[in-house]
Length: 267
Image 1 (cartoon, rainbow, N blue to C red):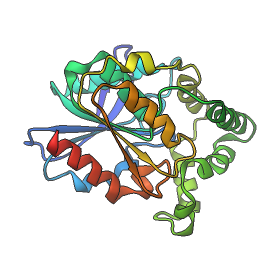
Image 2: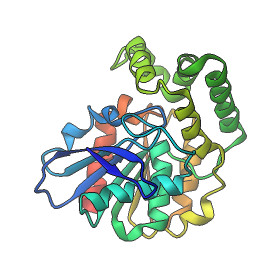
Image 3: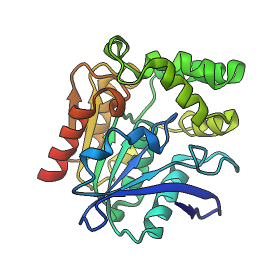
């Protein structure tokens, strides 16, 4: 399905699950992902929740034209989808890049969010992360998405995943490259992170019940970065998944789902 953003671009979304459910979960993708990235997660929620999947502008099947967008504008795009579907309040679950959009939603649109789930997240960049970010940027410039994904995968998947991959690494590369064949679109997505300021002061404004779910072996956003988020959001909770890396919706699905369901049910 397609709806218009406030600046008249087409944003793609899907609606799945139980249409008559009382609660809606909106899943927000990581940087190099699309709606298909949640294919192994949504079956765990489809009976009890209405599910909304969204490709951000510059991702997947959404428009890739226009200027780069900061996370505030991405958040506004999510609200456009909720308005189109006439959803007053939803559970927002964002992973990595999507968690940064979710943070902005929590700060600026708290009245539209019943619960906030931030996975593989951070509040302020470290010099180490900035060095990784620069390497991705340079790889994309010099070799396109194929080279970037070669450099990216060791940062976003744990060592354990490479020993026993749920999806073969070569297939993952091919799928992701096909989904992100527009290099300029990916540059526009990455710029939002590159330009993002320290968000800790803003996070203190979030009043929505919040859980932070982080992989113990996440080298891109180590646990101490997630702890900064938890320390900044009043009454939030941090759950660390043992042995998991960054891409929780690929390598730690049962543990991620368990943490999400417990939070939703008992909050």
